[in-house]
Image (cartoon, rainbow, N blue to C red; front, side, top):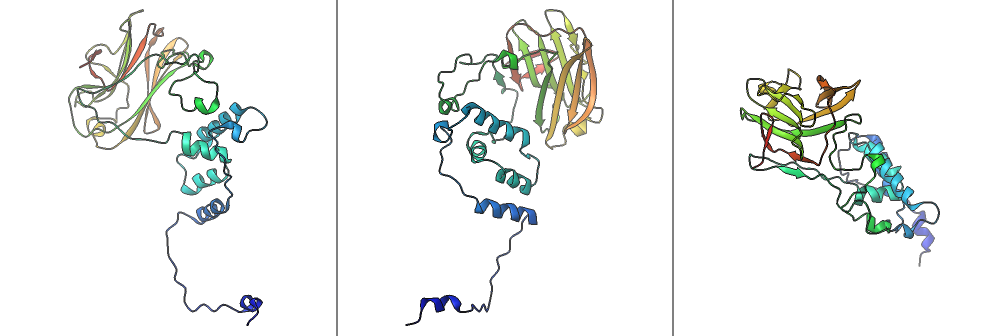
Length: 298
C-alpha cells in the first residue's frame, strides 16, 4: 500500500482550464471583494447592547455608528468605494447599516384628489416608554429636544432657516398652479410652493402670507417665480426626473429664498424685509391642490 505522503508529493498536471468570465467594475473592487470574503464575522446579535458592550456608554456606541454612516457613506460613490467603506466598518456599523439604516425609496403619483398631510406634533415624544436600548430601536416616535430644534414636525423659524426639497417628473401641461408644498398654520398663515406648466410664466412659484403681520409675497394671481428662467414650459414637462430645492433664511432682517435645480444653485429671490416667523399650530400638505394663494382640500 502506498504511503499517504506520496499523494502530496506528486505533481498535478492540468490539461484544460475552464474559465468563467465576469465583468467587474475595477481591479480595486476585486481586491475589496477578496477582503470581504476573508473577513471573520462574529456571531453577535447587536440588537441588544448587553450582548457585546462591556465598557463605556452603549448609547455612544450606537450614536457613533449612525453618525459614521450618515456622514461618511459614499452614497454617490463607486461599488469599490461602497465596499471599501463596509470593509473598514465595525461589525456594529454593518449591522446598523443592514438592519436599521433607512434605504428604501420610491415615488408617488398624485392627482387632483390625492395629497399627504404631515401633522405638527411629536407623538409620545417627551417620555420614551422604555429605557432599554433594544426596545428604543423599534419605536415610531421621536424624542423631543428643543435645543436641537426637535420641537415640532414643521417649524418656520427663519433665523435657523427652512429648506424644502423634492423630486418631480412632469410630462404634460395642466395650465394651472399645482401645489407641491403647503405649510399652513391654524391662523391661516401659509407658505406655498407651486409648479406652473402654463406657457405664460412657467416655473416654480412661491406664495407667502403671514396673517399675524400681513407680510405677503406672490399672493396676487401673477404669483412670483422663484426658479431660473431656463425652466420654461418645455423644460418643466420634459418627462425626466429632476431634483428641486428651496431654502428660506433671514439675513440682516431680510428674508431670502435660494432655488436649486439638480443640485446646482440657480436663482436667489428677495422675499421681503421684516417677515415674521409663523405662530400657531402648523401642518404640512404635500401635493394638495392650490390656486392663487389658497389651499383647496378635496
